[in-house]
Length: 533
Picture 1 (cartoon, rainbow, N blue to C red):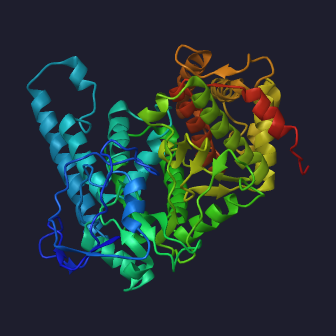
Picture 2: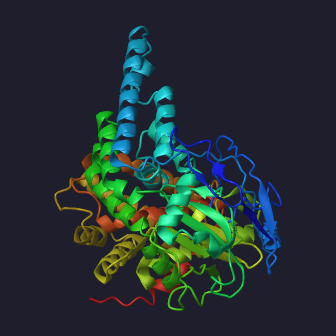
Picture 3: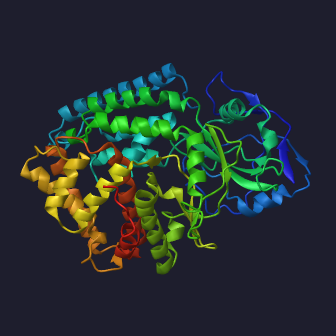
């Protein structure tokens, strides 16, 4: 059965004067409130209250309702809806208001501290007060786009390069994106696919089950006449927030002004270079046509199509640059609590596959999905596959860069410090003018990162609590302040995303408490590598 709505729906959470009456589909029924999310993590915030419209039930040849009830998780979780500010002036107004409120909060804190004599308080930031943290989280989750991407970009790794207060903000907003009200979603779908877009689906759930930095994801059933299989098929519909692509550059400028005004970032972070890399990555991620091409490429036998350990969803051919419709998969996030309940063997298998995938992406495909967010990797216990659902952050690397980077990693795994220095110079990590303190910190951090691949490292390598990996990551973190202080040049542009994914894979293995034969993975892939020079 197909559940449709004949009545008009007015979104009660849109801005005053901007409510639109539009016909919508009724949310599909949910079988179990405790069911796993599926492809992306949920947003837990304030409850969304949707007026119950009058509905009409229409029978169709296929039992779409039964299909949906069997497979879709709860879509009425605690989500929060707010209009996405889409014009440049509107976004400037919001960022300007944020800057003013942060300044007011800092001034209030200065006045408060002037009446007290606590030395510990005087050594902390006036900007990063509890009240200002609340202001930042509230505004960044509403703005979405580059605001949330900064949080993902800087907080996904366990590197602690940020002040702890700022890390707290970015980690929170990473999981707290709002979703756009129904009338705004309808506008995007109509402008992108056409006014008859509803005819494509046998059913469509208007409340998304996930929202992130540049878009939100809905459950739907693709009608048989539109489906590549000729049957009704469950799909995930990824819808981009309006004008996010056009707002990237201005948003990053506003955020840079706020971060630098409060002197919140270390000098060695090379903020301009970091933001330039983010701008390039965001522009790519806003192109869903590009993402669809990588989904198709990774599904080919030349990539993962013949590897039974992985599942890459198919993409609907009618997807556009702002609406991506892909096959729905049933796994759960590999970083979720449900996965931690799995057997040790299952957790070892998941970590092994993710680390193996990282090396294959680099040294076989030379194309890497660089976002290590655990929600992008799903574990299907029934098929025993890792399901890959987000290719927006996929990067391609030149043969020359991968040649040089493998040389560097081999030198690090062999504890050859002279070769580490040579290949670091060639890649652009170093200028040749660094002092011994910086040079030692860089080479030491590279050697520590390569520890799981060393010939003398006991295998399988344990990433669990109390293992040697915990002390290794502590040693790597100890090198970061030194490098931030003495670094003379930013790291190579390619390594911003590459290092994020590799460290994210190790962090996942640690979270799972996994044991992985990293040396065997290394040998299987690297021994087959053919250098071009």
